[in-house]
Image (cartoon, rainbow, N blue to C red; front, side, top):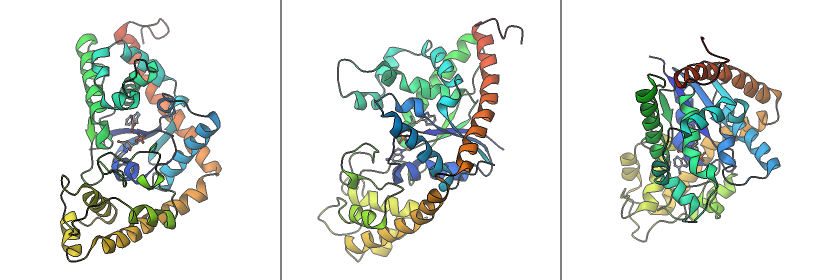
Amino acid sequence: MRKRIFSGVQPTGNIHIGNYLGALKQFVELQEDNECLYCIVDLHSITVPQASQELKKHILDVAALYLAVGLDPKKSLIFVQSDVPAHSELAWILMCNSYTGELSRMTQFKQKNRGQASAPAGLFTYPVLMAADILLYDSQVVPVGNDQKQHIELTRDIALRVNNTYGETFVVPEGRYLKAGARIMALDDPTSKMSKSAENIHSRISLLDDPAKIKKSIMRATTDSEGSVRYDLAEKPGLSNLLNIYSAFSGQSVDSLVEQYAGGGYGVLKKDLVDVIVSNLEPIQQHFNDIRHSSELISALSEGAAKAKEIAQKTMVRVHDRFGLGIRRAGK
Ligand code: AMP
Ligand code: TRP
C-alpha cells in the first residue's frame, strides 16, 4: 500500500556519505511506491548561526543533490521548509504541548549545547520543529539515520499526547532505519558519527569530493594494528565502519566481504573501497553539475512548495478546529 513519506536534510554544506547511506538512498528507493515529500530544512539550520549567502548556496546545493542522487520531482515533492510557513505555525502549537523536561533529554541538544548554561531557545526546541515537519503532512514513515531515533520517538509522543487531549488530530509516524547505512562513523575517529561540521575534512567523504580526496581520506582512515579482516564493532570499530561503507555502496554483504578480504591486509580492502566509492559518486557528481544552475531545479522547488502548501493547509484547518483557534476557519 502507498504510504506518505516525509524526511528532511539540513542545508549546512558537506553532505557526506553518512547522509547518503543513512537517508538519501532510502529516499530514492521509497519514491517508487509511495507518496514522498523531501524537505530542505533551512529553519533547522539557523539554530546555529549561518552566513546568509552561504545558506542560500547550500539550500540549492542540497536541492541539486536530491535530484542528483535520483529523486524525481515528478514522483516526489521536493521543497524548502521556509517556503511553507505552516511549519513554523504548527511548531508553536506543538511547543505548547511539549515539556522542557523531555527536550532537556535530547542527546543532540546536549551535544550541540556542550553543557553551556544558556543556549539559543531554537536549539532547544529544534526537535519540536522537526515534529511539526512530520505531523503537518500526516506522514506515516520517516526514513532517517539512527541518530534521529530519539527525535522520532518524541514526535510520536507529542502526536499521541495531542490526540489524547484534543481528539484524533495527527497520524502517529514511524521511523525507518537502514541496516547497512544507519550509522556511518567518522573515518578519523570511529567512535563518533560522521558529521558535516567536524573540523578534519578527512573525517568524512562529501558527496562532491574528487577521487584524490576520497583516496586520501580512506587510505588514512583509522583502523587497528591487528591486521586481520574481521567485523567486530567493539574491538575493531574503524575496520568495521569501512566494511559497512563498502557493503552499503556495493550491496555485497559484510560476511562475504570478510571472506573475500580475509587473507589480505587492510591496504587491499581500502584500495578497492576507494574504487567502489568513486564509481558510485561519479554519476551523482555529473548529474549535480548538470542541474545545479538550471531553471529545472528552481521550478521543481517552487512546484514542490505549492503542492506541499496545499497538504499543509488541510492539516492546519483540522488543527485550528481541534484547538479552537482563530475565526477564519470556523465552521469549515
Ligand atoms: P543532517 O546532516 O543532520 O541534516 O542529517 C540528514 C540525514 O542524514 C538524517 O536522516 C540523518 O539521520 C542522516 N545522517 C547524518 N549523519 C549520519 C551518519 N553519520 N550515518 C548515517 N546517517 C546519518
Ligand atoms: N533533524 C534532522 C537531522 O538533523 C533533520 C530533519 C528536520 C528531519 N526535520 C525533519 C528529518 C523531519 C526527518 C523528518 O538530520
